[in-house]
Image 1 (cartoon, rainbow, N blue to C red):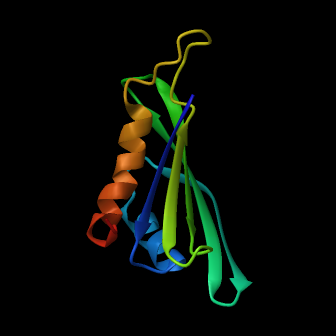
Image 2 (cartoon, rainbow, N blue to C red):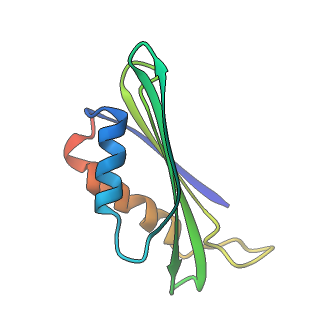
Image 3 (spheres, helix red, strand yellow):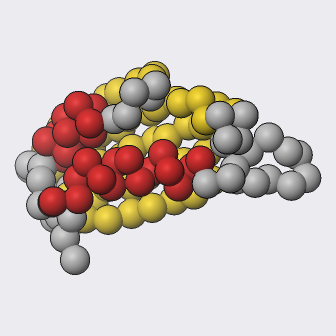
Length: 112
């Protein structure tokens, strides 16, 4: 089960990723990062985090994608892996909580 969130910000993709890296809550482990300039001022970057959530008793993953491939910087957040069950996939809000930490960091720059 995964939760996907998307919003646009008034930052360049690399600026957004730097802010996310600096503002992630304690216990969030950065597993992977990459940033690619694709030409003509366009770029895309990815951060992959992992964090343990006591309420779900499981590790959760958060993938942060930042790009300006369509003219405005778009942030996509994919939260996954926070549920334990095979049949009943319930993460007790861990995925949403993990994703909201990024939204809080970038809240002053989110475009309506």
